[in-house]
Every structure is written in structure tokens, then in C-alpha cells.
Length: 338
Ligand SMILES: Nc1ncnc2c1ncn2[C@@H]1O[C@H](COP(=O)(O)OP(=O)(O)OP(=O)(O)O)[C@@H](O)[C@H]1O
Image (cartoon, rainbow, N blue to C red; front, side, top):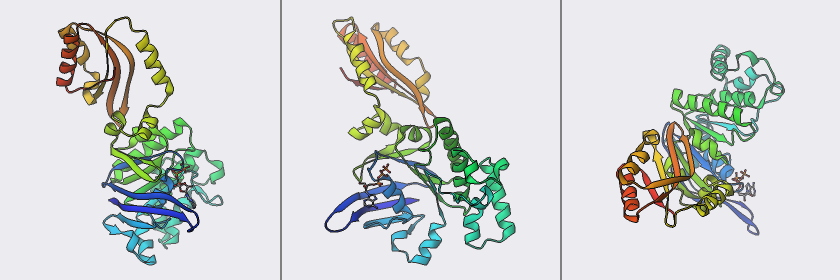
């Protein structure tokens, strides 16, 4: 649905050139929710603005819905852009227009008949749950309600693609959750392709199918969210996931407190239904080794459960090796880390 080929964007003049994007290749499938995560200045905004050509790429191609946007003239580009909705971190609403008129705005611009506008806007107001607020102005709304108006406005022209530019970054965690649920709902309901940029790992984990990590204008890692987050390869990805220095410190402390003279420290990753199975206890019963849990997480990636345990196995070396083999045979990912 979206394809970026060797996308490069530089700013500035010959004296001082800033390369915001360098040779980016990315493909987003129809109906997918694709997240791009990166630190400040990594190139996220530039990337998303290049997709609807709000920013003109310096080199490379942008394809949306099988059409190469970078080749189009002004009028045809305008037409294709109507199929790409966008929402923003600071909502970008018209402060002097009501909720109803903000949502109606794109339809009014293209001369849609009044009755049709009324039907469509009422439908969208119900979809985003703002029935009680239709005649209010943006200043009378909370952040979450403003973003709901932004989403309804973006959907007014029945887009195939929705671009989300840090859409929840200005919202508190609870409101963020409700907006993410709404995005997930419209993705499923309309099979809408969503590309979002964020610096929040929680956003990716909650709604994205695939993720790309952007650093210094290049994609350093991409793939299904579970793969990238459970087996991060690049340092920047690790920073997003491996989070707190506390986790590392905690592991060091736990390791130094181990009683056994000999222990093997292992990170075990469970994905899907396996997360809730009693595989560990069955295997250690069989091999007779002891274990201590040093660290652990059980959570979900989108709606798939996963668990990650750091465990120290103590006992006869051969028995511990057999334990690891049996765990691998039960399809768990087992990584020896110490
Ligand atoms: N209009 C501009 N003129 C010159 N340089 C720019 C311009 N816009 C962005 N840049 C530079 O391009 C690089 C990427 O910026 P961009 O805004 O895309 O990053 P970002 O990942 O979205 O950051 P943030 O999360 O802070 O918004 C930065 O070095 C930035 O300073």
C-alpha cells in the first residue's frame, strides 16, 4: 500500500546540508498498522511528511496505492492526497469552528452537497463518540476529544491510508489508550492502512503489526513487533526496550546473590499460548535441576501474549544442559547469557 524506495531528504544550502533521511526503503501492506520509532531528530517527522509530499523528497520514490506520487503534477497529486488522511500531535483544528464544522471542513472544500456532508459528519461524530460535543469549539474540549475530532476529520474523505504524526504524544496514558483503541477499531472496521511515528514504545507494542526503528535518518531494524522487540539487534532498539538501567542493575544484584557455586543464567522467551503453559515446571521435574527467577515480564504485543524470564539453573552441568535442550524442544527461545 505504501512503498518508499531509496528515500532521501536533505535540508539547507550547499554551505550547510542536513541529511534528515538517507536511502530509506519501507513497505507497508494494505490493512497493516506499521510503526516507525526513533529518538528526537532521527527523521520521523520528515519521513511521514514525505509520504504525502508535504515535504518534497530530495531523491527516491514514494508509492501509495500503486501510484508513484513523486512523479505526479500538482492537480493529480491533490487528487491522490485526498486518499491519505493525517492526524497530528497538536491536533491542528480550526479554533473558530465547532466540532461539526471541523469535521465537515475537508468535505466543504471539495464542494460536497450539504445533505451528504451532514450524513457523513453525523456518522463520523458517532464513530468517534463525540455526540454530546458536536457544537463545542476546540478550546472547550480535552486533548483526547480534540484528537477524536482530528481522527474524524481525517476519515471524512474516506482515505485508504491514515498517517499519524505522534498522535498520542500530547496525551496522558489513559487517554492515549483510548485513542489507540479507536485507531485499532477503525483499522479493523475499514481495513485502513495506518502508518504512525512515535517515540513511545508502548504505542508500538499496543497496536502495531510491524515496526521500523529509525536512527540518524536510516532504518536500522524492521520486522514484526514481536521479533524486533523480543530479539532486538541494534543498540537503539535495545535502548527503547531495555529501558531502564534498573533492569540491568537488578540482574547484576540478583546474580551476585546466587548461592550456588555453579549456575547457568538463561533468558527464556515464551510467545503466544505457550506463555501460560507449565512448560518450565514440567521440564525441571523431568531433569531434577533447581531454578531461581532473577527477572521476569509477562505482557502482550498487540493481542499476542509473551513472557520473558531470566532464570538461573543450578544442579549437575549435564542435567542443566538437558534442561535447556528440552525447553528448546518445546519451542521456547532459550539464550544463555551467563
Ligand atoms: N526544515 C528543516 N530545515 C533544516 N533541518 C531540518 C528541517 N526539518 C528537520 N530538520 C533536521 O532533520 C533532522 C530530522 O528531523 P525530524 O524533525 O524529521 O526528526 P524527528 O525524529 O521527527 O524528531 P522529533 O521527534 O524531535 O520531532 C534533524 O536533524 C532536524 O534538525
